[in-house]
Amino acid sequence: MNPSGGFDDVTSLTPLHMIDILRKKRDGAALNTREIEFVVAGAASGGLPLEQLAAWLMAAWIRGLTLDETRALTLAMRDSGEKFSPARLGKTAVDKHSSGGVGDKTSFLVAPLAAACGVVVPMISGRALGHTGGTLDKLESIPGYRTALSLPEFEEVLGKCGCSIVGQTPTLVPADRALYALRDRTGTVENPGLICASILSKKLAAGLDALVLDVKTGSGAFLREEKDSAFLAALMVATAEAAGTRTAALLTDMGQPLGCAAGNWIELVEAVELLRGARPAEGPESIADLRQLSLILAGWMIHLGGQADTPESGCERAETALMNGSALRIFLAMVQAQGGDASVFDEPERFHKPGATETVEAWESGFIAEMDTTALGWAVQRTGAGRERSGEVVDPHAGILFHARRGAHVERGQPLGTLYATSAALLEEPKEILRQAIHFSKTPPHAVPLVSRIFTRENAQEYLGNAVR
Image 1 (tube, one colour):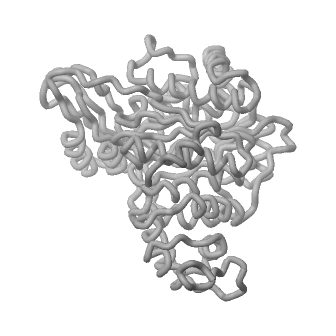
Image 2: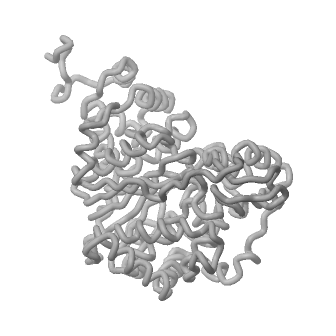
Image 3: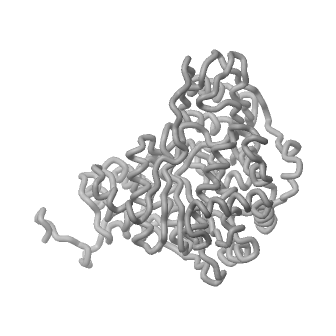
């Protein structure tokens, strides 16, 4: 009997009922492992009605998940389907994952950079979620590129190229497939436990030896406040380490779009421009943050993968792979191995054919003091680059190319962003969002560090112990 007078059913054979689990979570009690496994099994099999899964997600969002609930949910989701083992490839398997941001295309850079430095990168990615873009949607703007590979095909590409970026197979973490789509439609995205379980279940199911997490903070992050993002970062490190995967998490700025392109095809073009070796002094100033962050993340991947003694030396190795063209060759080889037409990158401007284009100019002079990056993400989505309902087709050519960064001084009439939309009718709402989301001042804003904090197994558990939730 438990302290409240009821019987704990962890080892009981008493049948479970979803309505009882819903009431328990609704009333603020923590679920035990058996109850969480029941929910996950029902999500994976389709045996639970969507309205009950949606109600459970909302109860978990409002009441929160304990550390034990989060770990149980992560492992139950990991084990809800088939798992991949990269052991036959004979290399350390390392991956990177971002908690979501606007213009975040680091996956297209870090995967080939790390692969060029001796690790194998089995990257299982997702689609657009809320105001953020989806790695798979971006890759599918390449004609012919296949994100749906079987596990044997996945292994074949990894053996040939050293990296592969795919979506979940129908049998790999099916519980997350169901819950991920529901979270997007029920307003239950921004919860650290749910985010942690969704991200890590896919990564752990890929048989990773090590994982680097890019956890966003700021106006464009799912968790805007630094204390909330830090909690998520520490939570994911502790959860993954408990499952046997070496993990580090970097808290990074999402107070403005990363790089200058936000959309699908235009983000790939920007990533390939960097893979061709463009330095900040040679390319747009706005890609300097993208280049720096990609090298830092790749450095940690190379370090945790045993190919560099420190993250800093890993970063140096990654920059060498960037400048000598080896990472670009790996990326293009991956595109071709997954059925994509890599020749579109020879003349990307000829392939880019948006339905309508318009440039938004600065409506006043001054320093760009602040960007509501979540709003800017919705502006990108409303051009046709994202989806409002699950299964909607996204426009590969839609998006926004930003011409000025936070802290820049602009004159009235100077271009702020070029909008690419599916049709002229879809230009009006994004234009208005931009006017509301970008704020000017007479003095420059304070500089914000690109990476503000790093969590490893040495400090994550201690942070969680001291955190007040």
